[in-house]
Length: 248
Image 1 (tube, one colour):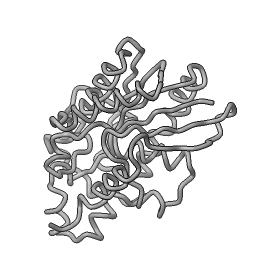
Image 2 (cartoon, one colour; image 1 turned 90 degrees about the vertical axis):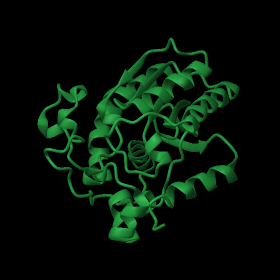
Image 3 (cartoon, rainbow, N blue to C red; image 1 turned 180 degrees about the vertical axis):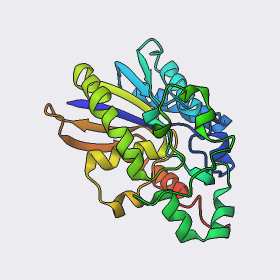
């Protein structure tokens, strides 16, 4: 049995402020730091033992991984970073308050921008300081690979090749792998693993800092998935994520 540990980064400063973050690099809040540490303690208590880890190019996921591995006494394992695990690019919404944006454009429109399968938000301006083409960490990417906006479908299109070429072989070799990433890059993985419909994935939310386990059989067929924690608490946290972009 192969075990894949998915972990959405702890609460970020912009999560705390209820702002669209996307590819903007922001740090963890105090709560986010504690969530990451708690995730590590829980994983250690449950006997998880990843041999290798993957994360994005964004500090909130990287720091979450560091803190989690530190609590597990496993900071020595190999860690690989990829932009393909980055959060969905929210285009011109990046930096805006979610509730205020819903007040302006309506709950239904903002829900589509946040959660629809193939309807991206309006693109970020080419001259915006938040445009990732100005960020040195993406200097080796071709311009066409640097998004100005993304739908979940776009995230799946960039994430799946990385899963197939890097993470899946590592999981088959080592038996247990930890991936610390973001709400939408992990939702992309979940849709792919479980073959969820567009409607199902629209309604599915992943809370910050809660380990989410996928188990696969010897042929890498999906067997089951589960969050580690109190089911009622996790349900409430998922509802909070779902309600972030509703009118105040």
